[in-house]
Length: 97
Image 1 (cartoon, helix red, strand yellow):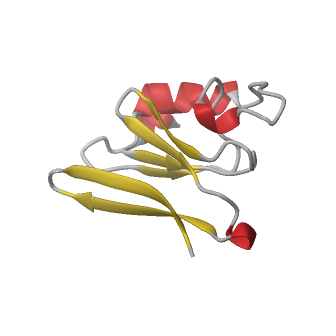
Image 2 (cartoon, helix red, strand yellow):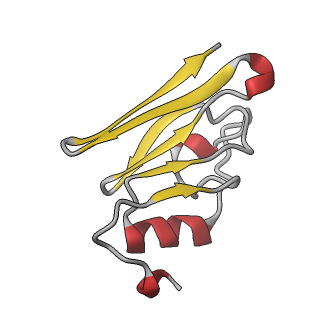
Image 3 (tube, helix red, strand yellow):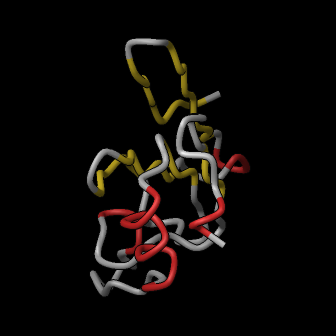
C-alpha cells in the first residue's frame, strides 16, 4: 500500500496511535507503548507530518527522519495541533485554546 503513494505530493498522516519509540508514545510510567507498524510506515514513506493522539501524556513534537510527529494535548484540556505547509517546508506547533 505504501508503495502505491505518489511521493511527489506532500503526505500528511493522521493516525490515532503514535509511532513506537518516540516522545509521543510514552506513558506516565515512562514506558513506550506506540505502534511498531505506524513507525515502519513513517520510516518507509516519510510523510511531512504525522498527527497523533491516544497517549495523552505523550504531548509534544518529535521527529522520525524528515517526519514531524505531533501529539497535542487533548482538546478537552484545551490542546490542539497547528501546521502550516509552505514551499519552504512545514511549521508545526502544539497550541492551547
